[in-house]
Length: 276
Image (cartoon, rainbow, N blue to C red; front, side, top):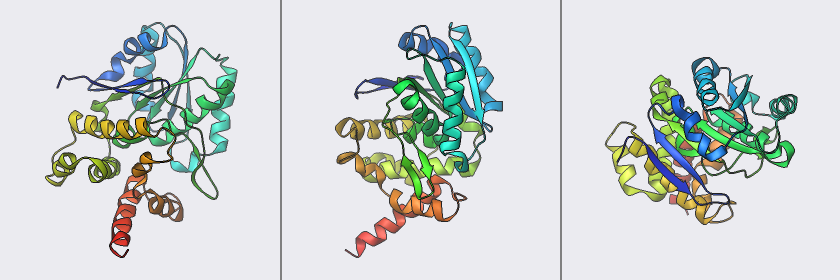
């Protein structure tokens, strides 16, 4: 495979997931053909912004986009209506129109929040996903699920809002803490268990994360999302381990990461299945 790989997701509308090293530096040029000329509001959390926000914004400006940015506190505890409201107010203050775009630069929390904001603002503006974690690259940035947590539980409010494009820069994985990378690997294991024997075997062998592994995970998700965009049938396979996992996350006050919780949830689900 080439150093830059693309996968087209045939939803309504269709979009491309682009995977490769260094893409953050030329994301503006790559997105120009998709978006045309518009204003882009980039949302990032307080962990990601110091690392990548300026590089991404500079690339977008160099491609001719008008750019503004909003930074919110990092962490699952801030994935709520308070942060969502603040992002929406920023979009309004920045005078974004229906022809403009929101870009989610970060992990799953950022993607969910910014995607939800884009789906709500002016009853829907385009969103670009620029994932910075393995979990976001292989799972949450693809498929159009967005949302926030409620007191009653995780991801209980949200919308289905497919991105206009996903740009996954694999070079960003080198900056992740081992625990964050492990979170993403839990979702890779999930894909292997539900849909890809070869992927699961490569993980069992302890092979390192590669662009080809990311491609394989995204391709698994693509197939299930295309078959069931609204999560009423086949796509529910992607929730393997998540019911128990979400309960573990909430019970821990979100001190347990999503991937670690899902990994435990998959173990519980497997053990439960043996008793049926």
